[in-house]
Length: 208
Image (tube, rainbow, N blue to C red; front, side):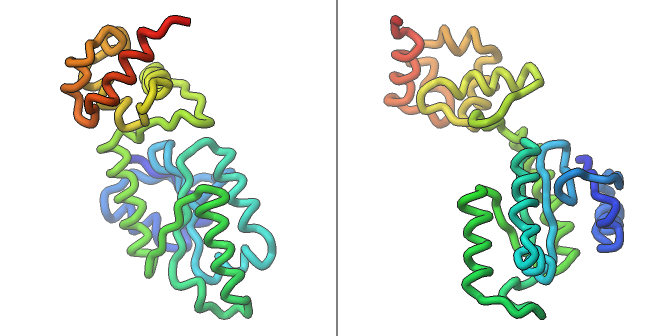
């Protein structure tokens, strides 16, 4: 696991906590976000005070835009309770902002109690990425690596999402074998039932 941290995050103590846990970490100036995990997950970290302040001075949604434009997996971590801060702001405004980030911007929001818990979340996200191979989402994604192109291609098949695309490639070893697979052979893949197998076979054999 490799984590890039914005140099301004050093004062939070999180980079030191990560180093103490044997995580490879490098400080640099990030154009967006505060932490980049394995060049895939881009994390914006905010204390509860900073979250509310960024909402009040209109920085929040500009930061959301940068996260989305990065074409990484975005994540927002808020330390503390944003409904209980030193800033005078309507509770509904905070609730609306949280909903906008998670629903309109489609950026997952996680909460932590302190920097130690934030460090644990970063490590957990990185470990999960390594275990799941950070499956490639087809929509809006333009893969560069050959293997990612294969996963991207397979998600064009009916009822095949990122997880199933990975399992298909792992099971058959190549796109050619997947294309030539019979309905019976497809049924041996975890997550494929008769209906889904039939859809895939019919789609591949469909004439223009």
